[in-house]
Image (cartoon, rainbow, N blue to C red; front, side, top):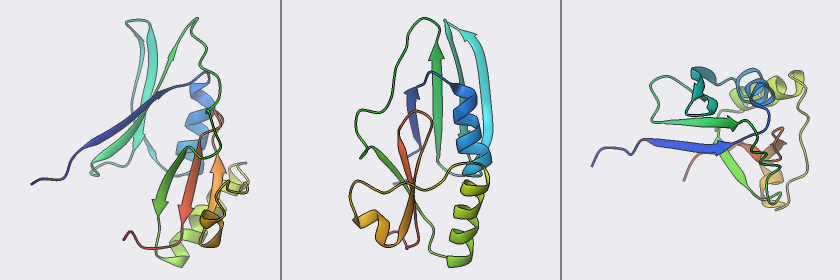
Length: 129
């Protein structure tokens, strides 16, 4: 069976703020963006050649608000400590300080960051099991 390709899609009220978080902070690439597509603007961010990306959309006149809880997470596993530290440093240098995770498990080997919509991203210094 071939690996599945995944698109995580969600709406936002501020695409530019998300671009800063996911591209400048996390280091993902802007893969594609669109405007006025059936009333939606949006963008896809990720890394070329990997089987996932994130799609963020905005519809004028349709506010979406913030994440429903502090435990809505996307976790990136970064086992190499040098790469992990560089990733954490890039987030902080981009203006995104770590926050305390709701579940203390994530603070043991990782750092949690909150995106402009209130969704959280964990940079976990561990291998994927």
